[in-house]
Image 1 (tube, rainbow, N blue to C red):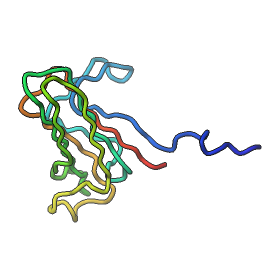
Image 2: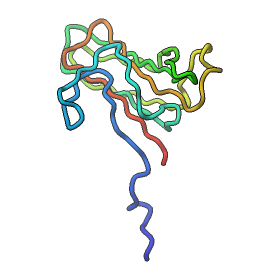
Image 3: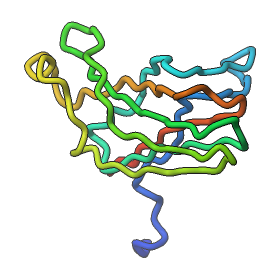
Length: 149
């Protein structure tokens, strides 16, 4: 059987967006739409400190003032509890609206000193977004992780 050229093989990376703020539609497993709000904790299926890179994507169409989006991450502790949330990246969107993407490396994630001895790597699987001064009605904030196969 002939070998398949590298350029034609399947993509060995995973790249799917998890909504952290905004509305997600209903589907086969969700009977009604769900709206995630500022400060809501989301458990991620991909542990971010194992990711080669991840991207925060934020967008809205317009608001009364500029909006700051602060992505905070926390580890899963060995005892099953959620660790301390630490700010990973902040982005700003103008009042006129728009889209912003912030790229981060999994190696650049920090963990609170009190949690250092209470984790087993990889461990970063909780995220929340804090929006200030207020949340635009159509704000969407998502997170993607790109993981080597």
